Image (cartoon, rainbow, N blue to C red; front, side):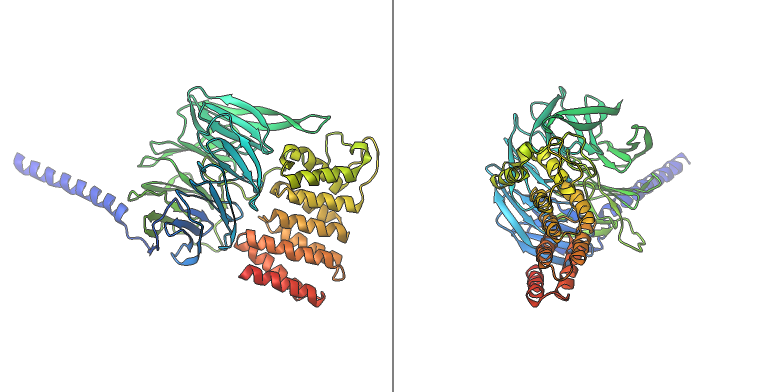
Length: 572
């Protein structure tokens, strides 16, 4: 009798373990919805933009596919060695490699530019909220404009330990191997250093500041740049502690809106309040988490993925799904629509990880930027320090009352590549001239429309998304074709149009100027072509549509032909 019970128990146990093992095996061997075989082996982790994703293969090609595995386009690049791939908020793809080469390709597959640095890149190019690109090497931090111009090369006191991150408006935080975090302004001015004696565990961007984890303490600091009332130059970084708590420091941190996601290596995920750090949700996945950890938020759901694992957290704060994946050299990614993409050498596979019934495209909330990733909001949350949407608090005067000399000096600094040294101060001056919202404290007068037009042109030449709100405000106020022309040119120089307001503003200025004013229309053709070339599909479609409207308008034939030529250039 005992032997019969023992045999029955053993059989039940084996059956139970067999069921569990079969379930685990099914989770890993579940059939993919589609697979695509590439012409070359994948060279680096894929990146996602909306419902499209991009891979770089060993045949020196950049590939764009959609979530059904269909090819959208394929672009051959210059030869790369050990490449990194990243993408900006406007959809421009950036490739950097061990040879020091940096290349840029638009989201539509247009080859934009390439440049050669003196040293190999250590990390993927970092896209900041103002549209500028930062590349770290062993000895330097390079700041590159979206059009491929090296604006600045900052020599570092020690080699970087990990990727930099934004730490408030106009502030960057860079961990170094000497166990310090170097705080610098976006204009390249060293602001302060923070010692981390036992090493840095986590560093992430947060609204108006940053979150840092070290020595078992996770802290959220807000930052602000102060300016000298006399010279209007940044000279000090002020930091205010918002909250901190003593606990095991997480593997990584991502900020989405008012929530902070803290992921731990044992599979634990905490959702905390950004306001005070209080714990909102605590849940644990059945797998360990590793770096790099891919993380996005779409339609209230969190998607996480790392090598060997993918998971989803529902909007109600519970685990929606988790899946063990076959080990590959590359980090899987999940699109906002819930499609899981895995890459294994030559083969790319797609899975319906989180099936959604959608009436419209899923809305993705990007992280405020975490180490090694470029996932953050699609537009700067604040203007560049020193630039405000309203009045300027700092006493202002034109030296000797010579506005022309002042503007000439700023233009010369841009042409010579030294504009970054005084960009904060110069941008604030240009804003005052453009908006004409403050008279000189010494020689009171209003600026002429020609001075305003030159100020708009120069703001555009800084090629920073941070100055776009000032240009849009000036466009709203003006009816002068001369000023309208230079505002349009400036918007084209900035290129990025995350919300469609640049294209709409250009169209509004053309209507106000009328068809007899040709200068604004010619400027619009050039600006719209740049926005289409550097923008994502939405921006490109809007810009091309606006060009078609000019080509079909009541302008002279020469101008309409010019618009058609710009359209042809974009299509080719």
